Length: 339
Ligand code: PHE
Image (cartoon, rainbow, N blue to C red; front, side, top):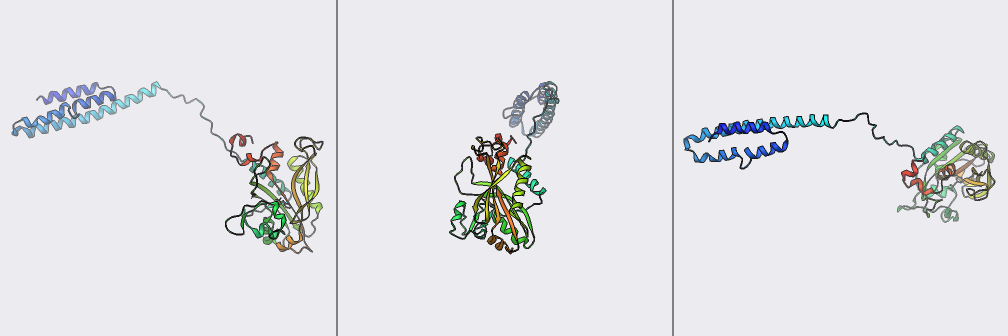
């Protein structure tokens, strides 16, 4: 058995391997199950016992040599392949990259921030109030005892805990502010989410934001209320806007009003947006009911105040001419990216 010749031949063939496939084949030919070297080792049994140790040692030596050489050749092949691909498939670093999508604030947040900024100018602070309320604060303390028919104005989500509900409006926040700040004068707005269990249409959602306003002091009159609303409308919709008030009813205000603004499209002549009336409803409001003042800790013979509540989604729809309130929380990028 010419072991030396075998090693020389194997090394020469290895040098000739130019890719991984050739290397693989070479490996099979010499080191595989029925490779030449493997067979050479098996033949050890044909030798006289005295020659076997030296023979075995020699075969193993050759095996180590071949393994080391193969490893080196594999590395060389890989490096050559890398150099080849780097020169052949040159990378054009001057190509523009893929643009990164920029996020933005939700249109509801944008308008909410504008509203908050306007009221900040008018001296109102932001007061945050809870979304999960109790029946007492959402209704009773706002002058709506159990079974009061006015409760029908708010279709309510009740929880499985008796008396605990999702607030139907931001007005219960009035009670929290008054109880915290009494007997200080108050000038706050309360922005936040409200929930009503009602049919979803293009004009109403089960979840929507409101901005409540509350001012309490010793000389507050309806004139102050109208002035604040007028200033707000002009700052948000333009200097030439005017507002009118109609009498209305809320259990927690007396007198209660509904506020309209002259139509931003037709200026009062009548169009499809204002349904021919020339006016757009923007909020409910009124003078804080004496019973509510009392529940807040204020003596109604000394203090008075006004409150208002508006839906910024409706306001946003007016600002941008939107037709469908359901788009606000539909999570549709085609809608959101317009703002
Ligand atoms: N809470 C009333 C509503 O949700 C709005 C309102 C607020 C009316 C404050 C008067 C005073 O409809």
